[in-house]
Every structure is written in C-alpha cells, then in structure tokens.
Length: 529
Image (cartoon, helix red, strand yellow):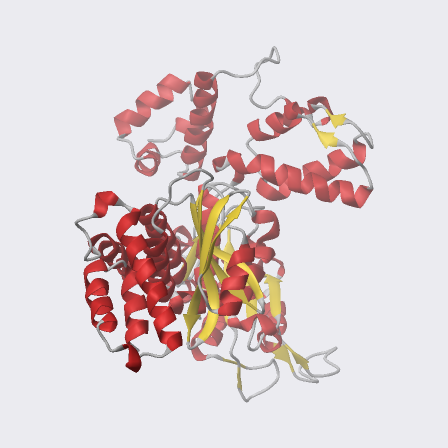
C-alpha cells in the first residue's frame, strides 16, 4: 500500500511528498522488505530521480503546483460542461494545453471497438494504442510512430474500461516530462469516466441519428448546429416542431430524431396533413371499426396505434382544418384515441414530430391555427436554414448527390470546377430537393465519362451570378442583388406594408425607404404604407 501511494505521488508530480515517502520506506530495516518490494522501491526511486531532473525550469515546483492547476482545470471542465460530449472535448483541450501536445483524443469503447468521441488538435490520434490501453487497463507508452510520440491511458467506470485517452507529441517536439504526462493523463482519464460511459451507451443511437441525416450533411456551422439540436431532441421525450422551407429535409430530420431516440426499435409513421380531408384525417390517424361506414369491412388501426411506442411524423401540420386540429389536440393532450365507430378509448404512447413551412405564430394571430395546439407541438423547436443561406454546403452536397447518381446510372463522369461554381452561385429556391433533382437530371443527360461543363446545366442555374456578358459578378453587384431579393421577399411576406417590413428587417421606416430607393425597388412591392 505504501509503494502504491508512492507511485501515485510520483505520477501526480508531487516531488516533495514523494521524496518524504521514499525516505521513510528506504529507512525500513532490509529484513522487513521482501526482495520483490525492494526491486519495486528501487524502480520508483529511479523514476523520482528522473522526475527531479527532467525540467530544470520547475526546480522550485516540487509540490506539483503545475500538475495541481491542470487537474483543477480538468475538473472544472467536467463540472461546467453542458453535456457529456462538451466535457470530454473540453478535457482534451485542457490536457493538450497543459502538456504541449500536438493532439489529444478520447475514444469510447462501444460493442468491443473504439469510436472517436472527441479530439483536440489538427489530427486525431490513432486508435491502436488506445485499444491496447483499454484492453490491459494500463497506461501504455510512450511509443514512437510516424506521427510522433504517443501515450494512452484507460478510462474506467464501474470497474470496467469504457474507453481510452490518447496523447501525441509531434516528431522532434520536446513534449513534457513522462512522469508529469502520465500523471495528468491518468487524472484526466479518471475525471471523464462517467461522461465517457454515458457517451458509450448513447453511441449507437447517435450513430443512427447521424446516418439518418444522410443528405442533410454539410460543413456549415448552421448544419452543425442542426445536427447538435437533433441529437439533443432525440434524447428528450418531448414533441418536436421542425420549421423550414419546402425541400430543406424536414422529414429527414424527423427520421433522425426517431433513429437517435429510445423509440427507434418501434415504428416511424409519417402522414402528409395537407393531403387529408377532415373525414380521411380521422380514419388515417385514429382508425375505424368494422361496419362504421360503407366499405369498412374490417377493423383498421390508425397511425397513432401503429406508431404506439414509436414516432408519428405530421408533415405540413399547418394545413390542418380547425376540426382536425381539435381532434389532434385531444389525442395529444389525453394520450388516447377513439376509432371511428367505437365508443371506448384506446391508450397510446406516441411521440409527435410535426413539421411546417408556415410561420405558425402568424397563423395563430390570423385565427387559422389553434394556439393551444401550437403549445403542445412547439415544445422542442428545430429550424432548418434554407440552402441559399449556407452556400458552403452546396459543393459537398452536390458531390455526394453526383456520386449517388453515377452509381445508379453506371457513369464515371465528374463535375468540373466551373459546374460546381455555378451550382454554388444559384439561390436554390427549392433547396436540397431541387439540388438533388437537378443533379439527377444532369446525370441522365451527361456523357458517361469526362468532365461535365456548366453548359450542361439549366440556363437559370448556369447563368446565376453572371452578367449578361457571361462574366462573373463582382462582390458589390452580388451583394446588391441579394439585398434586392431579400427586401422584395420581406415586403411580400408583409403584404407590402413598409412598417411591418421595416420591423422584420430591423430598420426604421425611413431607413427602409432609403434602401428601397437605392435598390430601385418599386411597383406593388413597396406600394402600401
């Protein structure tokens, strides 16, 4: 026990306490210390001597002050983080800064394999050393690799390995003293144990949610925020309202929420509310009993019952009639439905995910949507930005759609840089769906090999962002065109009322008048006051 305590002090870099403990052990009579213990004591004494000579700049810090500050920062990261992922990521950044490393990576052990949970640095550590560390429950390394010196410590929770924390210094970098690095890395691994266990248990759901997002991927910060919201919404048991223009992928969001939730083992059912009349709505959602109306030859469960224990997606929920809204409200509020033609209610446990391209707040003000139903649906809100507001996503999405189109058509053609530039210049009023369909049509008409030029694109897309001469727009001209389209759209949404439009744009009425005059906007858009 005293030897283990001495080793812990050395790992933590507490040289004064370690030296005191070592002197006490060395003063014991030789007859009371076994040969194996004597060998271990000699090895620990050598480690302590190496620790004291590793860094002359820290000669006066034998009490482990630097290590103590690093451990305190690690604990603060864990306590102040909003989520387990933020805690693990914050600890990786703290360890990297404390040890001057090139990269620090945390790996979660999921179903026998390592999955990268968080990383700090330009390139994550390789999982090989982390796997060995988790398997042996020992600190492994440092070992030399092509990328530098690497060290890994197991992350334990409940007596078992739940992952590993790996660190790498670039080739030729001085790095930190090995004993100090081992101590800080061990402390960090112990601190993130509960968070890593939680991440490991939720990893299958998170991976399912990410894969379900599919075509919604993109490097933009806006889509990264959407993916973060999807993960959090999936873990919560509350209804979700997905807002966004047509074609932005609201149903994919709903499927990702279902796939990432505990309900993923049950059914996901979807219905387009815009296509349902009042009578058909009741039959589709609540079902009917045999003989309840002409043609009802047998009992039929509705979507609420089919999605019992799962998720029901109500697309275009803003199109429901007042009568359908009242029936939907009661089903959500009471947690029970009644089939058409039956008198007894049936209990259902169905999670609702609704979507609309209308601003439901405005619909409530206009009296077309029930405010109490809005409160029931709008518990967790996810807004999907249109594609024109995230042009950096157009290129990656276009390449992904093009690869899929080539796989389906058997072609080997590539999109030229000019074609990708033309796609990025277009405003995409139909959003991701329009981009996908455009590339599918392009794949059918394109040659099977070679590069596809911009001339193959529809004229409206190929000429977007160009002057009449075919030359690219300047930044000033592109900005003016965007402002004009944006102001016109805002005026249209406000019904031409400049006061409302100015409020939506964050301008005064006089400021909006100056913008309209500068952009040359006239006619019906700016007529009413």
